Picture 1 (cartoon, helix red, strand yellow):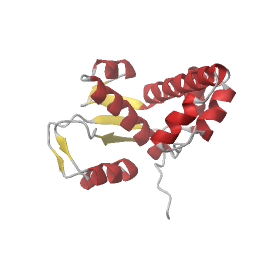
Picture 2 (cartoon, rainbow, N blue to C red):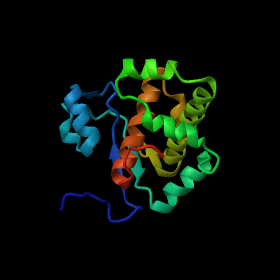
Picture 3 (cartoon, rainbow, N blue to C red):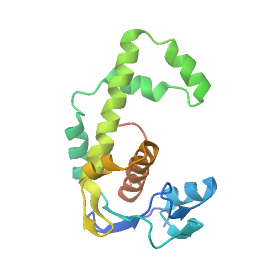
Picture 4 (cartoon, rainbow, N blue to C red):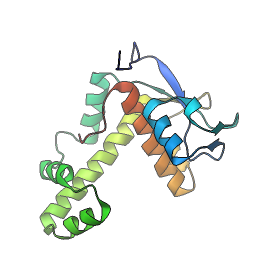
Length: 170
């Protein structure tokens, strides 16, 4: 069987963040870990690495997270533009520069919506941090800022992977 799934959305897994000082890996190992969730893909995971326990989201929980984030009022123009944007950073910057003001606002509103979806997904999926009950608000306390952003991004990738949600636009 090529697909991997948890047998229940009540099952949980532990994950670590690759930005944690107690985790060492190459970029290739990081990519493999984020794709598979296999800790063995990482070079070093010390005992003091912060462990996040997360659960898979059921389709109903995913839909609720999207609704909580504003799925019914999101910018459809922003969603369309977001999906049409070039992947290449330079091309994307030039493309974005050529958008009119209304299109830029729509893109910005859609990006804000996606950020809210990610927070709502974590709110629904985060069970504990290092064995202690946790909530998404604790992630806002992570410093430095790049580590906080990377932690949120990696948690979302893990949640999407175990929930079979995919990473395409909402």
